[in-house]
Image 1 (tube, rainbow, N blue to C red):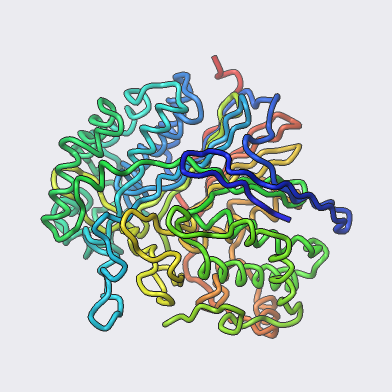
Image 2 (image 1 turned 120 degrees about the vertical axis):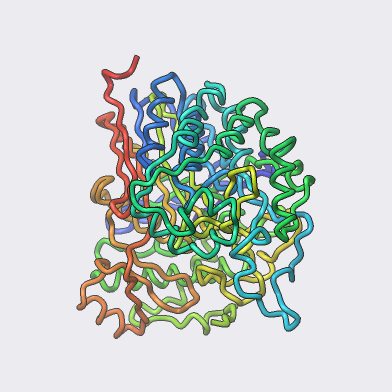
Length: 584
């Protein structure tokens, strides 16, 4: 059984029951139980540091911070700020995300919820026409698509509560990068071309991110002097450097002048929230992952809970993949039916992750035939890629961070309020605009994820720690609705003791999200014989032309005290592993 311990918005203990069940699975003993935070790791330390990020310049920023005496939390601030400059298509000060922390000295674990919030003037029907149908692109392009950002508040919160170094040190690499510029890469150019229309519609965005109205050539240097000024205000004033004063006035003035609904009160009212992660066990692994308003941890643990009764290693390849697909289908169905911001709606997390619920879901799986999503109990009717970032870091003491940050779609809303350099997100599209109508990533939902003033939209971001007596794995990835299944596939490999960090980030991927009722897969995920076999079981399959995801993994082998790290070959990231002789 997988259960959770939930904390309220002030991280106070609300109580939890403890349940243990031991089951023999062909030599693999399965323990699934719940315990209150803090975590269980104590004693041993890696004695060195390791970092994996989606951009070499962010990795370099972390390296400088760690060498200056910073801890993993300081490094996380430097990474996030650097990525906000050099990876504007995926994250930034105008976005948000989730930061999963483990503090080595006492095992304390917490999720920093820096998810964006709906403006206080937001309405459930704000993107619908007179016939209650979503208006095209309104929740995707321009300032009306932007929720209130959380990343700047997270930077200040992390530095104040968990870091050792002042923001003047941890933000210094990002400020230099903003002033001196970074070189356009093929990935930047491809994504800028994808969002050309939205970027052109915002003169301030076009001035920074385009060149003469088109995507800049590779090698062009992008400089962001206005963004450097905002970062310097955060250095001097902390959170108030973004959410009050001159920056706040410029943000709100620019948004409202272009048709948005932000108010100064939206910014002053924004605060990060410390929440308990969701935790569970699968085999010898302890899993710690993101809690609501991220669906990631709940859906991940629910899939593992369904799969717990199957001896997956002994299954033929097609049978194993069939069971994985069916567990994905049912868990994403529950996501669509029940999940939303738990500060606004009641979500029975304990029930969703109970053994009884897993038994019910498992009972509906036919090992010899695919289910049909629209015939599942409680089916949600449907009327019909991906830009986020992740980084993983561990320091010499064993403090660790898994953080997944986003602006939602490539270059977010495409809108920059003049004078700020801050590219705003389009996270409002992650709400349910109308029950049963899919969003950008094809996800459907119900009223639990409807727009409300101050509410945080449901997310799929899944920063995760995997821990066994022998090892710690820190992982996560961008990928929109496919994030959770990417983390699932790696978790199963780690549980089997197969491969290493390079194998895990390169693992071919497949995905089912309940609706649309189709298995999406990367070109290398299945051989033709496997495709034919899954189709005979009744699955609909669709090969994606382009690979997806950009996973970043750090692993610590506690038996050998060796660190390893890997950056997804699909991206342009970089890793750094400290040599022990480098430590002061």
